[in-house]
Length: 438
Image 1: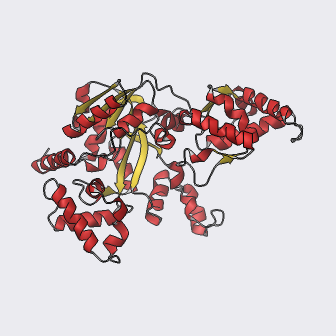
Image 2 (image 1 turned 90 degrees about the vertical axis):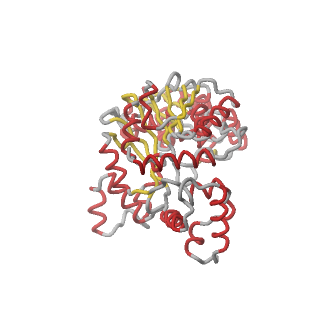
Image 3 (image 1 turned 135 degrees about the vertical axis):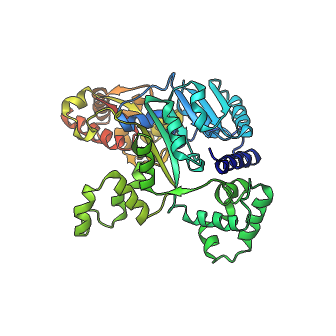
C-alpha cells in the first residue's frame, strides 16, 4: 500500500479515535426496534435469496467496521444463538463496543482492532457479514470486499453499502468546500467541527449548500463529522457498484430496501408508459433499472445491498406460482422480529375491538403504503407466535373462527376458506412478514 493510502488510513483511524461513532448511549437497547432487527436478521436476507428459513443458532456473524458496537448489539439480538465478531480500525471504538455488549449481557461476542484487509488472520468463516457504512471509506474497496469474500461461508451473505454520488451530491460539495478551507488536512477534530458549524450558521438560508444540506436540529458533533468532515468519504454510481461485484466474483442479491427501488413507481401510470419505455424497460437488466432509478430520482444516500458467492442461490418456485399441492404441504413461519409478546397483544386487542391489524407499523421498510389485515381473519395467525404452522392447520383455524362467529359471516366451504388464507399469506409473504416453505 502506498504512502498516501497509509496516511489516509491513519487519518481515518485517528478521526474515529477522536470522535467514536455512532454516539448512541451505552444503555440504549434496540430490542424493541422490530424494523432494525428485521434488517439485520440473517433470516431476512437468506429467505429473500433462497426462500428458505435458516436457524441462526451456531452461526458466526461479522460486524466489519463495528464502531462503538451498536450494530453489533443489533446483530446479536436479531440472531439468537449466533456468535458475533466485530472488527474496527479504531482501538477506542473497539473498547466501547466491548463495553456495550458486556453491559447488555451478550457473552458470545469478541472484538478486534483490525483492518478489513487483515480479516483472514482471524482464521474464521462467517455465515453473515455486516459491513455497514465502511466500504466507501476504504482506499481500495475491491481489496476490502475481496477480504470479506475470502472469509465468507459458501452460502454466506454480505450486507454492505456505498455512498451514491447522486444521492449525496450536496454533502460531497460541502466536503470539497471544507477541504478548500483546509479543515480536512489530517484528522478533523472539535476545532474543525466548530468552524463548520459557525460557517454554516453564518450563511444566508437561501445559499444552496445550506438550503440543501444543513439540518440545524441534527447538527451535533457526530453528524457534522460523518457528513461534512468524513475523511476518505467518496461516492459511486450503480454501474460502479456492479463493476466492484464483478471484480470480486460476487453476486448481487438485492437492495436491502428492495421495495424502495422499483423503477415503475416513478411513473404516473406504469401501465401506460411512452412507447419507447414500454418496449425497452421490460428488457432492462437489474443493473440498468437501478441505475436509471438513481439518475431519475436520487432519493437514496446509500446503495445498501446484499451480495454473496456466485451460483449459490438455491432454486425455488415463487409463491405466486405454487400449485395447490404445494400450498397444502407448505409450512408458515412468522418473521422472527414480529414474534414478540407486544405485537401478539396488539393483534389480540384488534381482534377484540374488531379493528384492522396494521402489521406494517412494526416493519415499514419493505412497504410503500400501510399493510393492514382484517382482524377476523388475522386471528388465524395467532398460533404462529407459538411456532411454525402448516397452511392446512391455519385454514382449519380460520374455519373454526368462522363457525364461532357464524352469526356475522356467511358459511363457506373448505375450498373457499383455503383460498382466503392463501390470498392473505401471499400478500404478507411479499413483505416477508410471513415466510413460506413448501
